[in-house]
Image (cartoon, rainbow, N blue to C red; front, side, top):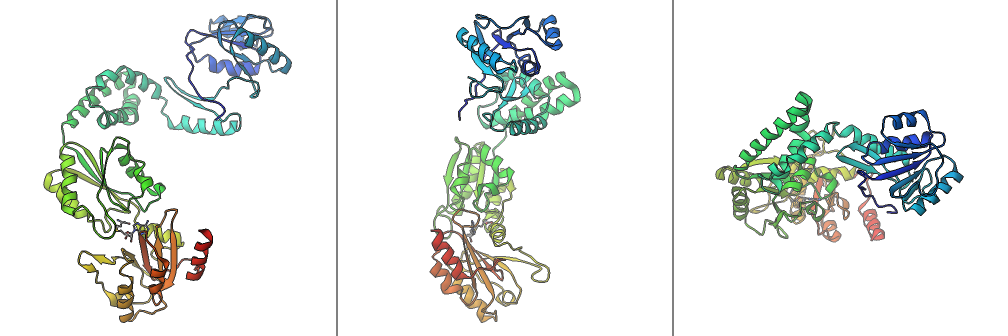
Length: 466
Ligand code: SAH
């Protein structure tokens, strides 16, 4: 960063500008939005500048700049559109002790003027250090479109209401109140009844939030997706931003945990291998206890919480404790894994259905409809299938599946450490054991990568990559 953005206090301070043409006008239009005292030095000022001077909006001196003209000025703009003259006046202003900007001369300016989105008192400054003014303009346009024109007014009214809002406890409750005001109730009230409506809405809203505060906490059962933070839903992202307690599984990627609010209490409940290290009954109690104390609890699970997540037990615990709950779906491992293969889970003429299976259940290797699964064209996404691979292979072959059936194992789908093993049912073991996968892996029965690389090529690729 070669330029550090700051907001300078200019209320009642002098700002001096030398120049009377187009460049001067462009800067003056911005400067007139401030509460600074403006002085313009111009031998031949444009008509607009003369009008502004007559209206008392600035002080106009009808001559070229002289030494001492910029004394006590905070900032000085050289806007003569004449390099020699700009350099001369910049030098004078410099001696008078002002910070100097020469219009369109980044190298010799002490400060630059950003593109500005004005929702006073909310002001957004965009700078590109002169690299890409077009980009700055595009960003400005995007922001202008997204920020309601009433935002400035809402902020002014909101500022005066800050002490009243302190009746709400500091933290999530107060933030929820302000978010509701700025992005929902406030703009709605403004659209309906203007400024007076906003005042009333603010009173009602505070009342409403104070009442709601008396209620119990809340539990969100949230899917964290397969690992790539960009595959989080916006709802999951918001839940992480606001949760007071986060109870998470081992498979939730660290990059995702990093997104949690810093003050959140983080409780891990998963261990290596199968099943949680904390018993399900203890997890249930933990969730409901925190919620009953009034906390906003996020129960964070990898992938989609409704897929092999023991979700129902947690929902039943919430119901039994009388705690509000909600499911926030996520992208399940099968969806992320199939995307990396460039395939789809279902395909006309190949498989009109897909099974989600677990290799393992609470009793050990899980039993399935092996005969059905052995049918050509059948596709299954097998979760927790690594340890059960030899068992699956044996059962399927025994029930008549072809040894040439494609099988693909995707380890760490969507994460930087992702690996793909493309093989066949006949060779699944020992190929899988040889591949030494120690991350979570999803096995597809009946699917190969679209551009089918052989297992050998995959391994070679991996070796060159590492
Ligand atoms: N609810 C999760 C599944 C939990 S069971 C979901 O919807 O994805 C845990 C199993 O999910 C793992 O053993 C593995 O088979 C699979 N899994 C989870 N994350 C994965 C990932 N990033 N890549 C491959 N498989 C994954």
